[in-house]
Length: 197
View (cartoon, helix red, strand yellow):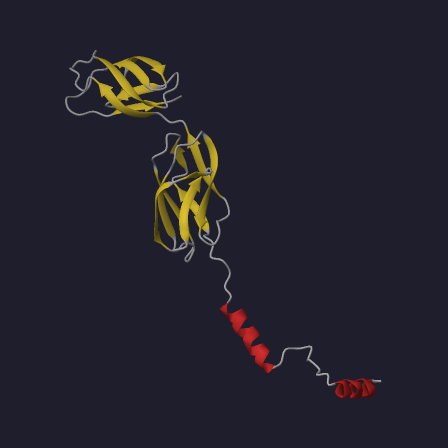
């Protein structure tokens, strides 16, 4: 019985160890619990703009709720590729520059020293025309000057407007080159716009 077991232990010099922590160990356990904090992981909720060019180089703004970002943020990946110029503006905002990527929808992940965020959807890469140069840079009224427009993302059937007026004889030579003829227009600087079908 219990009395005999206690008597035997005392006779053998045994010391009973409580199965539940005593007051001292309980205090230590509470201290360990109070000092534990879960890993800090970014919580992005949206991105703007929602569409960027496949060539990259566009500014992105990633937002979250208060406390979503902090000093533990180490970077941003877009479609698995690291973004550049990543800046944690405050606890709700990160800015960065999109990397080049194939056309299609991608996920954004905010990486951190204590863990990475879950995937943020909402960004799509598209092939958009992006004119970067024109030769010659001067044309004369009443139009008729042949132009060569260079850039990226041009596709067959693209339209060109010069000063808001449609150019004529538009030919998409390849994804980087378009030729056309300047229409009549007003004197002064004009804007050239390329629009894919």
